[in-house]
Length: 603
Image (cartoon, rainbow, N blue to C red; front, side, top):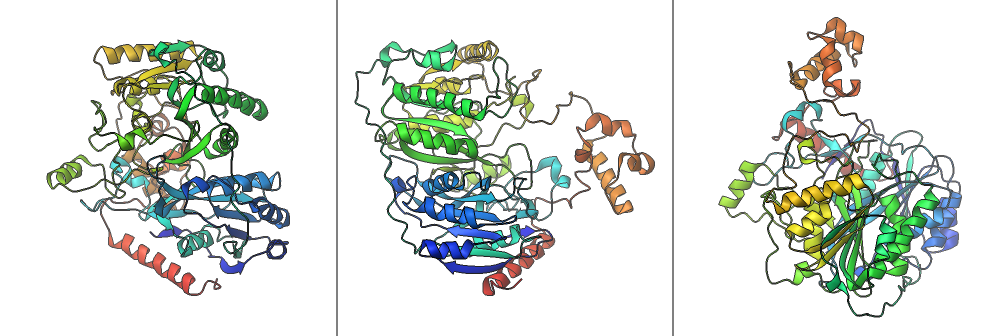
């Protein structure tokens, strides 16, 4: 798939094959541009979390040698990238963990989900946010209706004609060890701006980095299960204190979406501990979850990559790695690489059992209210759209629009509309839990969530005929979960659309009150675009007062910021059907890529 980097001057690409420490020392000494280290890959899932013996040493040398505003990108397996982060110490700043789709997933019978991604770690010598070109990925089109995969609705005027901004989950290109040209070309474009002139690709694939270090987790002897004493219940209390009351080996599956320590506004507890105190606290409740988990069962922990890396290091000391699930879920749009990569770390207590969702003879329970496109165990294949008319047509034609479930999830989206939300700042979509619970448990088993919040985990477990044990410290959220469970038992969908008064907010953008628009927001934004074209620049508030057709009070009332007012003026607008202009841009981008591939040293 093509990308388009605005105003990029693609970097000169040089390649160096490194086999020894002295050679990597020479290749990185005093280098001030962009350096890509390519580490050996494995085709064995159990080895993906285990670092090569000398990864730390080679990364350490590179981190010490780079100078100026250098960028270090490391392409490798999960265990090696975690090792790279420990080797960088305070010499480099973490910027992104980019997940890149593998062309060929790695399978491990039915004990883990097929491994469908490889990591690209981006580190910098400077401390500011990552500097790079504005890069867009071309729109994809549904093979059934030939419209854009995503339905952009009434916001098409605020999008670019070529495509959307690049995110930190790359599914439009594929990792193939024998041909890394697409990834190298993207980096050459992404960093094609001052002060950089060269992308130095250092190939460590032929280097003797040693064996993959075995990670030995504690051996948990099986104890008599006491889960018959645990019936479905919601507990208002501290997670650590409550976990300590549960019997050892009593829980079939645990899921947590803990506070991320990012200063979110919760009712009843803070989200601003020191980083040392935060992870010490996390290690304590993780150890308790490991204790109460039954042998062979799974613990799944959701977090952003930077936090997940630290959790990964502790989890592998007490449990056995199973999967690093990449949930491609765009959140609030900050910076030019859109944050989409959320991690679900899956670790088992000892050797994992076969995944219940993969070995069950019967279909999973279908929940009333689920979108007709969603299937917990059979995701929609990439490229197909969610438009109702297209879905109906595909069913009528018996089109096979399903694919294998792997550890790369793109078909579950965050809650976008307030009508689906309750008054909790970090509410998860129920479909995420439908899938997780369907994969890792069977009906009748017990599911634990020690940060139950508004009850999404326990509600979905209840709907799927599992028992549940939900712990929540906040009395406010605990009572909210109780009310929603009562709705469920009364036959009311707790995830239904409803008009609610909300005070909680996850993003920093203020929430506007509900109102009737005298003039549609789209009309106002297109008016600002007209003014911008007339003035040959983005208009100010005073310009809109002077040149606009509509009262400035409407802009003040309907928009949260002047940036939103100018959203259409800053871009070209797009259409959901293929256009000759989009095709021409695609061909230009392909030619640029082909030119670089043929002559990687040209600038």
